Length: 389
Image (cartoon, rainbow, N blue to C red; front, side, top):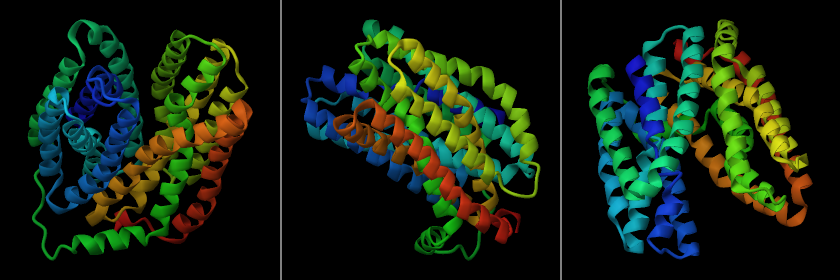
């Protein structure tokens, strides 16, 4: 398990392709409207990849899916780095998006397979979130230092090399799949999953909670620029959030693990985390200084930690043993959906109501996520967790 957590950190720390893709395309002299289209294709691939990798993890096994996805990344990223035509860049961007976040649903399924008790699963979920944030911080720091002297293609090649190494680790660290008989058709599996209202409500609550999370990247830069703050101020707000995650995650993981020891899923904590996220990032709409924006980011961090761990706990408890990968893949699209929706929300709010409307919208997203938890709590109490059967 530790090998997968370390691998997850390494892939995220070397995950230069997504945060530096726009810069790479600009260096290729791609027109701004086309850059937007190629970035959207990457996002579409990201969303589709979560569904595909989750379903394949159930059909052909966790090890085969993870290794194949990482080997695909090891090929697609260099192609993206070396392509020059718009058609090649667009195609490579979509394929890169498919496999960029592939470990998320697969590792979630492996954890559910191999870890029997909920407190340990919650603790691992907390450390996964910690590793992801630590890796993201490392991506920004390392990429910022290496981009100028080495160039973006070299960063993409480093990303590919780390993915190739993780593919090798997957062969050794992920258990071989047990032989399955009478497997349900994939179409039936999708139909059953999308008919599970618990999963649909968890998806909706998570998207609403994660829109304020992704607002850190989609909304904050726009508002800070409107206030005349330099790019360095945005960098300091990111650093403040990363430091808060690194400090609070180890402190909160034990408490969250104890809460996971109860008989019921952590739906109430998911609602609380969503509200904290909405209020925290919503307060950025009332800020006008670097300190104010950094404070808003830090205020949202406890909600982010709680929401990710609580959502993972609910997911583990409602996922049937034979569809853990698919359920994790469907839930994994929540972050991609938030990445797509947050810029649209920010643009509409800034154009019609300014920063105050952004504050109200982000707060409203947090409250909507909490509201979706009300029927989710009723349904999860009414039915026994499927994973226990």
